[in-house]
Amino acid sequence: MDTNVLIVGAGPAGLAVGACLRRAGLDFVIIEKAHEIAPAWRHHYRRLHLHTVKALSSLPHVPFPKDYPRYVPREKMVAYLDAYAERFELRPRFCETVTSVRRNEGGYLVETGTDTFSARQVVIASGSNAEPVVPSLPEMEAFNGRRLHSADYTDAAPFAGQSVLVVGMGNTGAEIALDLAECGARPTLSVRKGVHIVPRQLFGLPIQMIAIATRPLPKAVNDRLFPIILDLALGNLEKYGIVRPKQSILDQVDAGRIPIIDIGTVKAIKSGGIKVAPDIKRFTERGAIFVCGRQAEFDSVLLATGYRPGFEKFLPTELWPGKGGVTRRASELGLYLVGFHNPVTGLLREIGREAVAVTADIERRSSSR
Image (cartoon, rainbow, N blue to C red):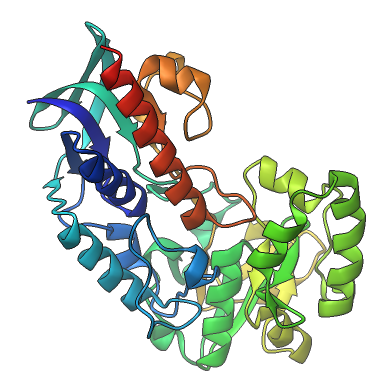
């Protein structure tokens, strides 16, 4: 199949690019490895909400409905994405898993398990959560209880009354631990290294808006200011087993690690509803031994150990165009990454900006032929 633009992925990033291309009158094809649009959003755990405000999180050209709450819940996000696809007549080809992308006569050949696509430009929009990361933990096979990755977690009901070890304190681990604590489980968070935690709202203002307002300030000012403000808002968490890393929030974001946006986990830790433990030394048949020497028994272990994008499996490293959006190399190649850069100002906001910029660059390339 020949097309001007091939979009890989029908999540928010792929849909945003498709909508912008539709408005620009450019032909394109969207392919998706699942059998539905936005599969990650459909299968996330049920209590998930956006951590960014709806006014700054909608996709290009279509704001969220006025009756949506400030922080959009998962089911309303899915309904919004369905309506978005319908509005712009986005009809992805489903069950198409990309196996290779290679240059071909000024464009690209993209192979899937069932077809080959010839495209002048390619947009990789398959998302950072394409593949769960399952680390090799010491003697984990010895543990006789239930083991699962956060990708397979739906809600806390099956864990009521259980002692659950949640491995990894990113946003997912922190929120799942809170879900477990609120529904009658006894969660323990294993925190391997220091983490930055920020409240979703700081002194009544959404943290996203504060991040946007302070981003133009000199980095040194932000690095000195935020620890002081966060200690006032959340308190000193070291006595609860949570230390702040030496690397600043902005340095960690630049390295691809966003801070934990707290929606109640800190309060649950302070009240004892969530316990905190250090890194795991090794597992036992009935639990785990931590590096501090402490030993505990658990009914279940939940790995909140993150995801990887997965595009490295089909995209040769020599074709990687940069971390996202319209870099000079991306423009030269006609090959773009959208939705892989998650700044403190919000992933969905960034997706919208990237989709508009990529479409403008594709228009420019098309008109120059």
